[in-house]
Length: 103
Image 1 (cartoon, rainbow, N blue to C red):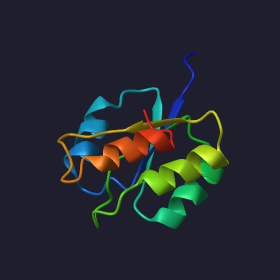
Image 2 (cartoon, rainbow, N blue to C red; image 1 turned 60 degrees about the vertical axis):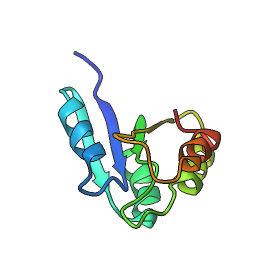
Image 3 (cartoon, rainbow, N blue to C red; image 1 turned 30 degrees about the vertical axis):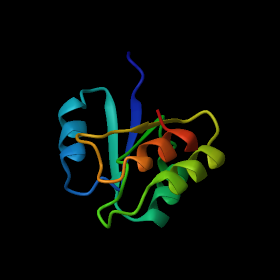
Image 4 (cartoon, helix red, strand yellow; image 1 turned 90 degrees about the horizontal axis):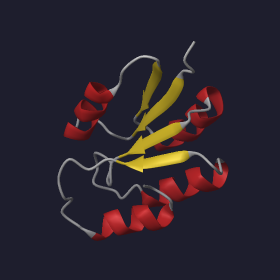
């Protein structure tokens, strides 16, 4: 029996990135979505995801890099993915997310 991959979509909103992620999900994957920065850490504890997927910015256009950094520190070894459907208005947010630990 295949192992279930646990994926957390963090701060994606109703974005193109969220739609792309939902299209890519195939069983056996368990998927959770959180839209609140505090809830991201609660979901890390509750669901112990294997992968956390962020956009470069949240729906308020705040960079997610600080949150990515904290997730990487809180859960060493977790895979953090930055999903970008289009280049963000500020290109530095991608570099900041990569430096914080996102792939």
